[in-house]
Amino acid sequence: MRPATATATAVTTLVGIGAAAFAAGRYASDAALKAAPERPVPGEPRLTVHATGPGRITLTRSLASLRPGMYGLAGTGVHAVVGPVLEDVPHAADTVVRRLESVGHGSLDIGTKVRFTPRLHSGTPSEALGIDHEDVEVHGELGPLPAWFVPGPRSTWIIAVHGLGATREHVLNLMPFLTERRVPVLAISYRGDRGAPRSPDGLGHLGDSEWRDLDAAIRYAVRAGAERVIVHGWSVGAAMALHAAANSALRDRIAGLVLDSPVLDWEDTLRALAAARHTPSVLLPLAVRAAQGRTGLHGDRLREAADPGSLGVPTLIFHGPDDRIAPWAPARDLAARRPDLVSLHTVTEAPHAAMWNADPARYEEALRRFLTPLI
Image 1 (spheres, helix red, strand yellow):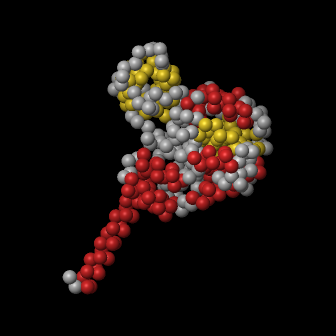
Image 2 (tube, rainbow, N blue to C red):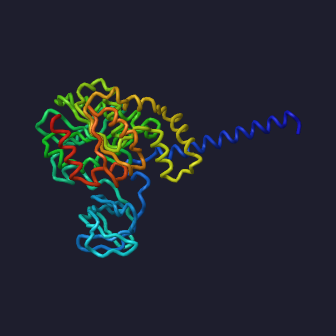
Image 3 (cartoon, rainbow, N blue to C red):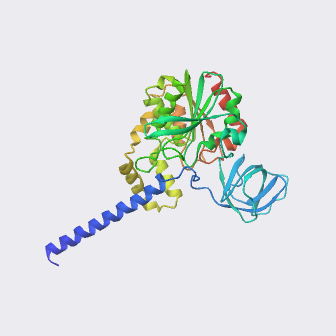
């Protein structure tokens, strides 16, 4: 082969490899960054309904179906709520019987495929729980953001921010507890949510840009009379809370943070999301690089926002070792390095953003103790 021909062949081969790597990286980053808000966080196994009876349901036995606590069951055209495993009834070797709390819509026919979800309720606070609310709009930098406002007599507001694969309906799990505390609650949506403006690139940024919609919500609350706010964020919503506490022009109005399953290392979370959507392991490093190139994500910005030395407000973290989307080691480190400000409430046997579901009573008691001196 002549030198010129060999060189051209080598260049063509390298270009082909580069194009393949680019395409592979784009595919892998899509798996992590194009999660629809209504789509469950990946990793939850599909379970089969084997039987139902008065107040009980029989499901495929798995680590998921054996978890303690209370969960939603979501399938095509069906949503239900299940309680704890029933220990005093017979179980087959390949099934588990749980308490069936309610069926919101659809039918749990034998053979129906379902997944566990942290969300128990559907609809608005008024529709789902009979709690009076107002539909309001927060004016974000990309346009109006739908929000629910539940009024209360206190001057400190709770701003609730859902996370990955969720909507404002996730916040409804805690709404009865919060209204009992007589605090105003603003449950917000942000870019990419149903009814909210689309992100300019059509991708999620794991809080790196979405936090500015939370910033707009803080401004809304202050203009509406809030003297201080406490931000309660799940997953990416928790990352948004940290960004706001570090960077908002109104950060002096933030009285405290509640971080549930916080995303504190976006590279780890990107890899976990891509892997959970069956991205080949060889492509995971490409997913991180492609995501950074496509979105401008910067891990240093999140690290700075979560820096123990710069944290300035009381913070309660709910997290545990069974979170496969947002590793809890950074949360443990944050709590260990700032014991004066940060309390870590460890929850075991709970997947991502389901810390409340595993033990609602313990969760709410820890939250009550945290909120009481702040509100």
